[in-house]
Image 1 (cartoon, rainbow, N blue to C red):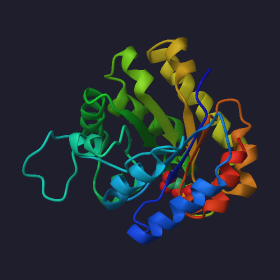
Image 2 (cartoon, rainbow, N blue to C red):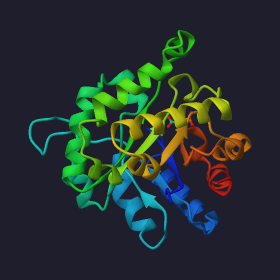
Image 3 (cartoon, rainbow, N blue to C red):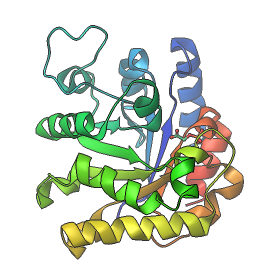
Image 4 (tube, helix red, strand yellow):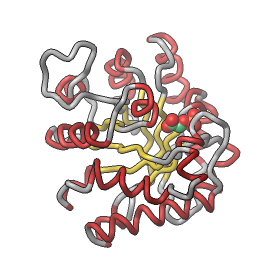
Length: 249
Ligand code: PGA
């Protein structure tokens, strides 16, 4: 059975005190669930978040990391640094990293390799832009992102990969893919992984949907057969909304 996952990407929001406050609300409200729940605070708050959630089933994950082991990369964070504060999972390839920090699938392939070499789990984000969808190129774009960043991996590595399909036009815009659009793409992604690897690999990988998921639309999106959960931005900053989304699975 594939894992159901709901992850909150807090992006560059919340200082230490605000993060403490949000974590404490989450701890109070979080229901018992089979779903894996994750939150990704800013780097400066990871240690505190890890310590706060250590007794809870909610996993603290990172929003990014560098591919190098260490060295002269001012402002960057390594896999060892993340692991030393208890982090086991890292989001890579978020569209904001691609758009504002020039991350390419080639750079991301290196980051994926480094994370896996450190026995971390990668939540790999990808998805097409509006022009790609308008030009009917969305399947091609998504296939190429997967090929360039992930298809060099051995089949065994896929047990540590989570996919997060996030159409760029739906992120932070209030515009969500329809449940049918999400299902159509998730099915395509699974088929693409099956063709490259095997049905076993494809059936085992959790594919999350991200882009304006809210309590109001989560249930319908999560009810699609190939949607195994969500990566939530804006709505994960309010404990009540995030918990409602977790409960919608
Ligand atoms: P959003 O962000 O839910 O605010 O659209 C999703 C994401 O960026 O992961």
